[in-house]
Length: 286
Image (cartoon, rainbow, N blue to C red; front, top):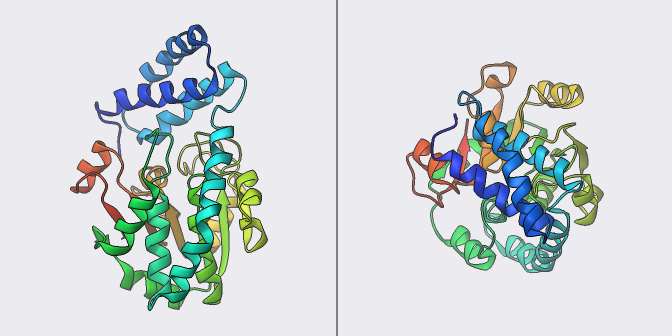
């Protein structure tokens, strides 16, 4: 994945969403937007869009003096926790609990304030459970699980983390050791340790942070501890579009790992790269 021209208006849209969440002061909003235009101008066209978004949002947090997504993250964790009991029942009643949990995890990927300001969670759940996946590498996924006892699960957004918990619970019942990975500090509405605590994920599996505030998983910037864990683990579940952007073109030690991407294609650029319509749902092996 590389930055396209169509990424530039998206960068600006992300900035507008963030400053509006961060302050009601319209004068300050405009001042911050003018400041972050320098970050947009400095975009490295050879890197994934998530790379540029990282520096953009770092600048916004610095200028605001706070995380603009903090309150909305807690709100969507609360909403998702309210859905959890019914979603768990769907998995328990399913003839294929693993794939039902996978589909629900993909449905949860719609919760993304970096791209949307509103979304239809219930409608997306129904679509994920009843329509074919645009890419369905479930047989390879099941085979990889049969072979591997340890899984690294790269988490994405708040709220969505509850949907990931459902899949992680199924993996644990299958006898897998799961290590969930959150961001090292706030960026966008991505999950951090605080979200893992708030949603109870930390009570059911190992959770570590990646030592980074990057959008996605930029291997140049993550902690040596995560690099070591990735080196020692052959099966990786990668949630979300940001992780897809930053991991799909690997030219390093991870290229021989079994990496499965679970996400929805939420922008025109990624959809064009995939050759699929916007909104496509994928369980795709690297």
